[in-house]
Image (cartoon, rainbow, N blue to C red):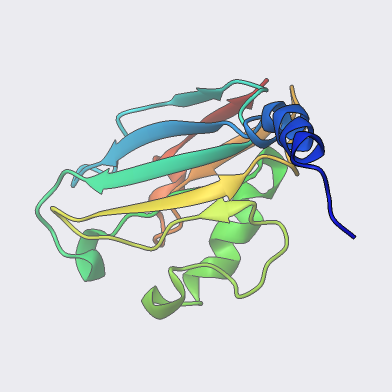
Length: 150
């Protein structure tokens, strides 16, 4: 059976708007040797289907002494995940393995290093209560902020 070229062209034209419906939104954040992020709030529009987040460690200390990562969770889960992650160690980025409460996370980086992740917003609810934090032991107390989706 031969498909007419006009039908193929019509199918491609009608599918094009759906193929471009995905929208990646870029976010950059820095951590430093004073246990601070440069942002206390990150806003991502509801039409973003995924987020490309880049974390830069603007300090000089190594990951073993002053490492930072970026972890996204529902706000009520911060302390429990941070406490559980303390014993997970640097090889696990100070996060409990396969913890479903972790929505997205980067690896731990040291001074002068950076890392990026891309994650889907499909599990996020516009107006939901989300926060980000650093899971290096003890850092979450000072290194946290609000993640606003919507």
